[in-house]
Length: 95
Image (cartoon, rainbow, N blue to C red; front, side, top):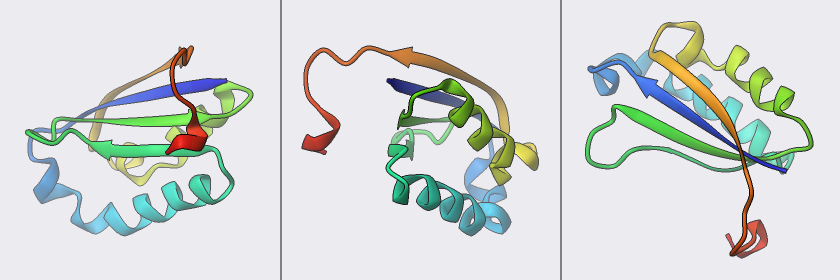
């Protein structure tokens, strides 16, 4: 099952993320190395949000990521939501 994690970020994210960026990226790489996190990144024009795509059996894995994420723990994420996603065209193998 695919899940999409949406983050809403603080207005000054680019300035405030520096102390937490490496640990956030390390966490993301751990999930990626296990094959659970497929894509992740902030929006391009304005870093006011981010989108992460997971392929896992249960949403609880995504929730665990959120609980561990230094951006969330340190208040840089103002809101988040997880949505199940039915992929009808394409495949994670094509990434």
